[in-house]
Amino acid sequence: MTESPDPLLDLLHLLDLEQIERDIFRGMGRSSLVPRVFGGQVAAQALVAAGRTVPADRAAHSLHAYFLRAGDPGAPIVYTVDRIRDGRSFTTRRVVAVQHGQPIFHLSASFQSHEEGMEHQAPMPAAPDPETLPTAAEMLPRYADRFSSPGVVDRLIEARAAVDLRYVDTPPFATVGEAREPRSQVWFRTNGKLADDPLLHVCLATYVSDMTLLDSVLLAHGRGGWAVGDVVGASLDHAMWFHRPFRADEWLLYDQESPSASGGRGLGQARIHTADGRLAITVIQEGVVRVPRG
Image (cartoon, rainbow, N blue to C red; front, side, top):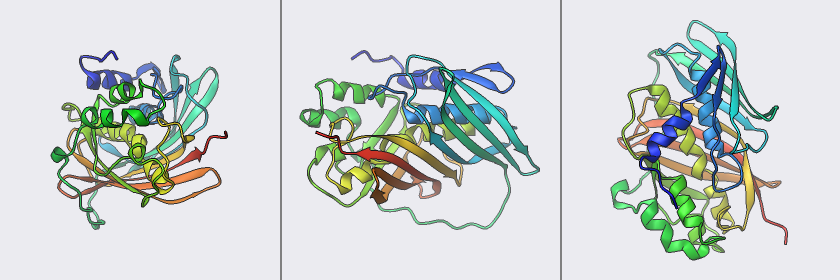
C-alpha cells in the first residue's frame, strides 16, 4: 500500500474544483474499494460547485441528490451549476455531474442567510468517548480473514486515511451471519485541522456521510458488506439537512439506523451530533442492497 504523506491534503485538493466557466467546474475522480467513484466524493464535489456560486454569507442548509450512473475514477467530472433562485433569504442551486457525455449525479442544494428563530432538538444518544475506541488502522487488521481478498484491509485503511472514523459497536463485517438490531454508531473527524470555511466543513461531512450509513441495513440481515462480498449495492439517493454550525475536524457522532429494507433497496437514516450534544445534521439515504446470485 502506498500512503500519501498527507491524505487530508490530498482530499482537500480533490474537493478544490477547477472553474472552467462562470458556472462550470471540473473535478477529478479517484479509485475506491469498488470500480467506481465513491459516492460521497461526487456529492461533496457537487456541493463545492454549488457553494462557489452562492454569497459567502449564505450557508448550506439542505441537499437532495440522486446517483444516476457509476462514475469512472479515471476520468474528470464536469459539474454544471444552474442558478435556480436567488431570494432575499434563500438561494437554490441545481448541479449536474457529467462524465463521458452522460449525467452521473444530480444535486439540488439550498442555502440561507443567518437568522434567529425557534429552537429545539432531539437529544444526543449515549456513546462512549471516541478517544477510547480503536482507530481504523488498529481495528481493521483484526478482521482481515473476513474480507474477499487479502488487500482489502490496506485499501480500506488507505480510503479512510484522511478521516479518523471509529466504530462504537462491532462493524457488520465482524459479525457475518449474526442478525442484529439495525443500528450503528461511529465517531468521525478529519485527520487534521481545517480552515475556518463553513462550506468546507459541510462538504467534508457530506463526503463522510456516505461511508457507513447503510451499515445498519446489513446488520439487520447478518451481512458483512461490499468488502466481504456477501452483498452488492450502490447508493441511489442522499439527503442532508444542516441544522447548526459544526466543525468536521472536531468529533461528530454519526448515529445511524435502518427502518426498512424491501425490493432490493435498503433505507438508512441518521443524526449527527457534535461532541457537546448539538444536533448538527440529519441524513437519509436509500441504496441498492442485493444478495449476489450464486
